[in-house]
Structures are given as C-alpha cells and as structure tokens.
Length: 125
Image (cartoon, rainbow, N blue to C red; front, side, top):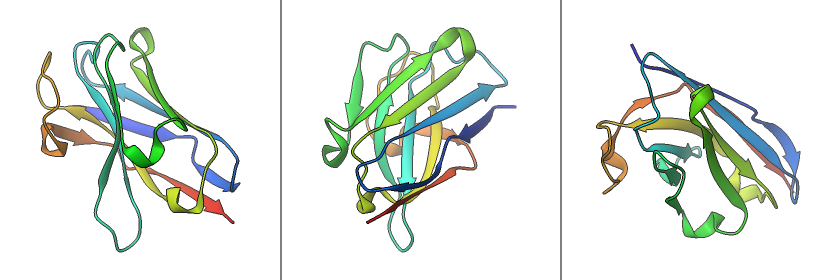
C-alpha cells in the first residue's frame, strides 16, 4: 500500500518561503518519477514540478520557474519542494504524487497514480 504524507505547509506573507516535504512508504520509490501538484479553490489541479529517479531531470510550471526547487532524498524516500518568493497566487493545497510506472518519463498529469492528502499553503498579500 503506497502512502504519501505531505508536511510543511502554512501561512506566509508574500515574498516569504516554505519547504514542503513528502514522506513516501509502501514500496521503493527510488526508480519512480515524483511530482508536486496544487489545487486552489474553484480551479483545476495543476502540475507544479516533477523530478526523475536520479534527480537529474526536473520540470517546473512556468509560473514557478526560478522560485520553486524540487529535490529528493532516495535514502529517506522523501521528496521536497522549496518555495521562495511566494505570491498570493501560490495559495493552494499542495499534493505530492508518484508516477504509475517505474523508470517511466512524464507525458502528463495522468501519469501519476498515488496521491497524498495534501498540505495547505496560504500566502497573504
């Protein structure tokens, strides 16, 4: 049973920083792409960032490029999202997710099959 548990969310002023963590259990994740999604009230869920098994390949949503950094520690089965220069538009519930298949690249959000419960990020202006 795959389990993903996010932490690190909270309330921060615009321009501030937060570091999200996602602890994974239930299998070995070192050969899976991991990702972070977010969903704001009344909006569709969007893919924010992904990282491949080695950490050598990453993807970022255009609106977070240069501000967010995804990383992973395979020894700890944990993926992180460092968020700097936060904006009110970043307010959302952030979820981590794991790709459905090992050693597979990302073609779109539907590639991800297991999700965490999410952590709330609120950025005040």
